[in-house]
Image (cartoon, rainbow, N blue to C red):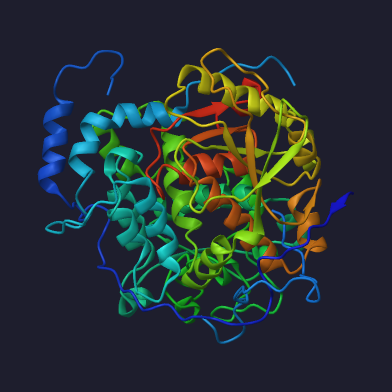
Length: 522
């Protein structure tokens, strides 16, 4: 396995932590929670109209050589005990389809309003404002994820996003005094080998399925002993007495483990989760809570099972992967440090590589390319970076006024950047700008292997996981997305852009073979 080293580092592993402010959402039931009833009635009236058949509208950072370079980076918070190849085609993005279908029915009803009745949040319309709002969640301002999502322009979100994110949050986080009266479905009993078999994207998607299972049983999803995803955090990290993903991400639930009893809790292990049907842990039809499915049906949206599954994955992954304040704080600090990022282009005239700085934030019209290689070759066809650039070139040629010949690359394979250094004006069309491609990236360690191998090789587990998320947030600064949905991480980028940054209507271009991604299997 090949290891690639760089000069710089973004995150260190020194323990520190910033406590989050307490937030106790209103406790509501599945059927009682109906914010914006006037909007729901509007949707009912619209859905009663006649419809035609269609509707228009990672990798860790190297420990720095202190003698050569000492960037002013805050230590990463580990949270110690007591702390809180086939034929290519251009595919129409399902995210864009969802966005188009939802524009008339949901964009107006749920767009510019908070999911709580009587509350109107200021909208973050400009792309720069959206980016600033996301990174600002790392500040000690008490600003919550729901406040960020409610500030976004609903026309750029997946259908019913503001309502759904609040609904999930309230289901998972009842008032503390009511926690002892709830039932819980615990994800645990998972061996290290089982845990190592899943990357962070795969884990988020499995947890999304299990969230539906829990809600279908009238339970709150929570971590049990030996939980899924614990290998993504350091061994000495403990939140509420348990090593779990809560060390980096917002808690699945604010109900403390002290209220779990044999009577109100049931363990859901990995084998049961993978078994899906016939194991006593079945979720609702199409893997989406029936309450949300009914509301989508009322609006006349997403009635096909694949569309419903795709939509629920978008909503559940966006909830599960919410970064906690201390994590976002360190990511924001690293993003502002220009020495931790780079840019380059190959001159088609001189053949020389020209270096440049990566702007902060990325300007409009930049493409995000996540090139998944590593161990994924056993599950899907792997494509060279040139295939991704060709897809971006095709879109650029058809939209020369809307996109730039600029690309942000994230990947675990160091050779991807070596090959990108050989690309200048690949795929130029007459309508494309007569300039060379500029590529951007972050200074990180890379190894062309799977996530489990990288977690062992680089720095600390928590810092490695955090560095993956740092690259993901930079990808969300982009306006065009090129990837392979056979990769769970590419799917996560595709999903979070529809909730975290309101870019669901932006183009996504598929590089992979249809057989590698169609059906959106969990």
